[in-house]
Amino acid sequence: MSDVLPSNLLEPAAERFRVLGDATRLTLIRTLLDEGELSVGDLVARLDASQANISKHLRIMHGAGIVTRRPEGTSAYYSVSDPSLVSLCSIVCNRIREQAVAEADALTS
Image 1 (spheres, one colour):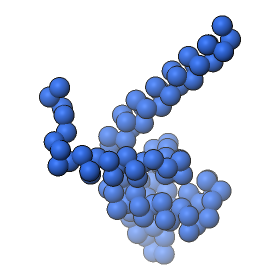
Image 2 (cartoon, helix red, strand yellow):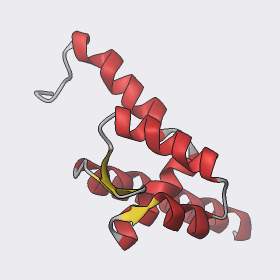
Image 3 (tube, rainbow, N blue to C red):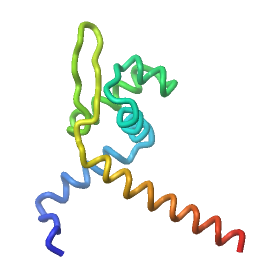
């Protein structure tokens, strides 16, 4: 396996997975991937969540390099800056779908 991550990079990889391991953050990523750059206010309205909660999650993702922030006047606009998220999300979501179908088939058999 030539793509094995060196030991000194395992902790940063684990931190990336910790950042992604939150349903609200995954919802934010999905929304930004689907709709493109959005303001904090737009995200608050779409997710029906508090501004403080959305801002907290965006700050964490920005610190991890997952999203980028563009200030404009009194607003801040966010977009996904890590192109690997599209592939990663696709792999994980497709596997979850496959497992759900298999489990449903097992229940009906």
